[in-house]
Image (cartoon, rainbow, N blue to C red; front, side, top):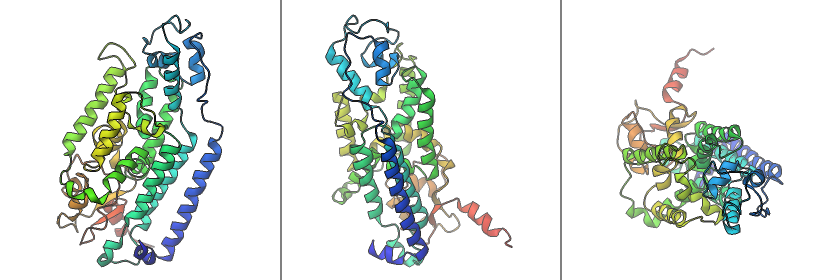
Length: 392
């Protein structure tokens, strides 16, 4: 880390300073703007009220409250909950869960700041201007990445709670389509926000800013388990499961399967509940335990196998402004980057496979190539075309 900093040019040090200052200002602005916008978690509601009266106070539709109370979506919204055989404890639990999904406004700004740091580090700072290929082992030190991950877990996770997060960003869009949220446009805009962050830098929102993704990354980074990590989950296997689970969720949510709208599969395996220290059922607790323990041995199991946003962001990776690029003219296919990559992403890019595994922009491959054929940035072919254009 020290050697890396000393090798940075004056230009890079200025960029580093400005990036850190701007990121801090973004976070501060987010917290100031978010003051007073949090939902009242001590909201007093009773079973002597109707769904129609309670739902607006919780910021959801009557259908959403009915689903949370395990009632049919078309149940009468004007009857008192007591008449619908809803107990005070059931109402309290439902209200608490719905309020936990209220977005912390400041969290959006934290996400922007962390993605900004990741983008600048990978694109401009990780490789010092004054370092040749013989000094590549000093490129892209892990400490800045680890620090960002810790901030994500601590601030975007445990301090600000589970919402918003990329997984909810896409799930809530579909839930609003069946009437579980009163403002579908707001949910679409939140999803677009996460998608833009994914496109700015290849899945930077997943790789650098998502708190549960960061927690898995930190677990995988513990060196004492390195000798047990000899197996990479095949991308065909992981993506098939991830896509199939999303399809199943949609069929259940819209009532194509089961004949009853509003059932959300991810509700029962949502690891983001960890950040509220609130587990709504044994399946959620088991999911958190399994994914966290699995992360010590397998790279990001939740991201690869479950996360619906991970699947959607994988589909738009080719649109990413900046990403890992391999210069095919220089590459000798020595396998150094493939060995360093914790999943199939580097292998698929080296061999030019059409369906390439997710790249989480972790940076592990960027200082391994002995012939300097790997960069993080815009497409090499585009760069070559620009270099060949006449100047003047």
